[in-house]
Amino acid sequence: MSIFEHPDQLKLLQDLLNPNQRRGGIDYSSSEDEDESMVVHKLNPGGIGRSKEPDSTGKSKKKPNPLATPLVEEEKKQPENLEEWQEQQEREDNDILETRKSPEYTMTYRQAVGTEDVFLQMGNRTGSSASCEDLILEISLPDEEMAADKMSLSLQETEVDLGTGLYRLRLPLPHSVDVDRCQAKYDSELKKLRLTLRLKRELDYVNF
Image (tube, rainbow, N blue to C red; front, side, top):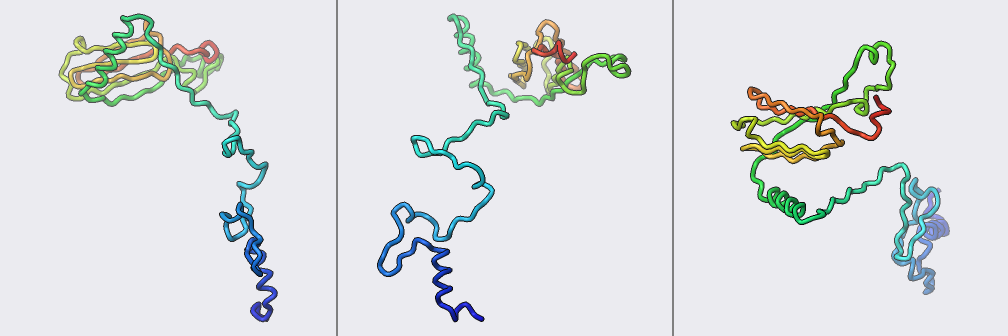
């Protein structure tokens, strides 16, 4: 039995696939349906749930995800007097005119673990970086001939600024550090500068 022997079934199939067609000089479609596809839309996983409500501009509103971390950029601190403004302008001009290369560096966390932590587990320490006291920053300076005492190193709570004859590194730190408890050591043979930065975080009293 062939479907072509029954033209009524073909018309029913045509009506199913194209409900907005013109027949007998009558237009069954509206102006809103002219841009729609000729094939009926199928259901998919994206169509499950409530439909998005359009706003006044005609665009659908997106619900904020409460579990997502908002990407909020910290506002830059504005200079309070003329001297701070001049220093900020000098730093920005130096960054624009800088021609020295940026060195390679690595960051690792270091944790002071004692016998009471390993065997007795008396403290609140864990294997995560939240229980680490220090941040080790190693900066490679190959082919650098300048002596360590002539290098410029500026350390702030949230930034490290290093300048040599061949290299310049201005690096924001992932955590605030205690400037008075940080150490620096330069290995002239390996051409590496090692900075031991003591972390200063809000919940350190809980993690240690």
